[in-house]
Image (cartoon, rainbow, N blue to C red; front, side, top):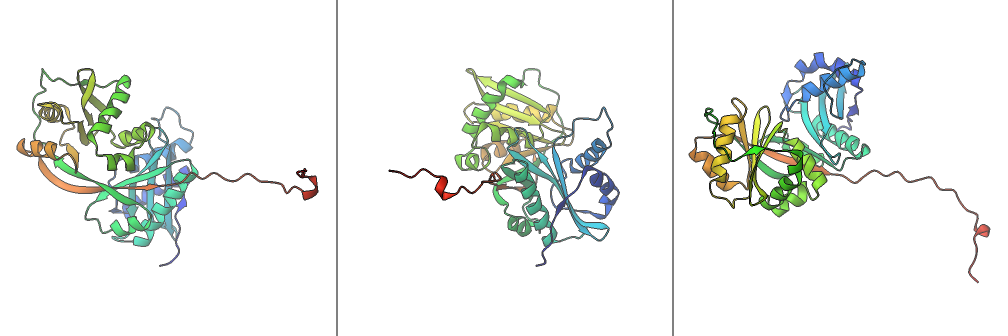
Length: 307
């Protein structure tokens, strides 16, 4: 295998790359707004004002002459501990060298910026899976995608309410009860890393259900996907959460369920949700890059010797 490297692109390079994206037509990862971040980071470099807030991003490319063999976009998640690869595109249908080089370069860039984890999502049967693993990214969780049935009128007696900033700790405690320990140790051993996981869900709207002063269910909805967390302790909670997704979720949206949410998946099946596929969640953990300080040699005769 030849020694190819992915180089970080400047924001101006990212903007000039935009016209070439049509040639990079093999999408290795789910798009998740990667192209939008690419353009917005380029516009930010021009000095234009009144732009939407641009997340901290990095764009890396593997060049081929004046064009590109591939490009990857990674963004910083909330809290700064985690980063996510939101888009990886190739000029060829399969290019293992470029995939491995792009993700390896992205991991090095994330580590240099103080990140501790690089995560990504890819289809379970992806032909690029081995190339992703060679970049040090290990799959640790399955996500099952389900098409949400036709929307129903909003329930007037829904027990869910919009989440507030004060609910963050309660949602984290729910996560600790609802998610198996071996998954928590991998993706969110601390509340700071949980903020990154929550940010990766792209949930622009959040709802919670309380019982006896504790949050027992959470529903997050983004532009395309909805997610549910519930601890399985309350009767009718799963049914109420799914009803909320159907009435208030994105049009033609997708419900994402983890492999351990078996009872919730069974309930969704009875309500007419259609399985769409399975994707893997990968992560690579990195040590912090702390450069050593320069030291000056001290002559031996200057040291005090013990008596």
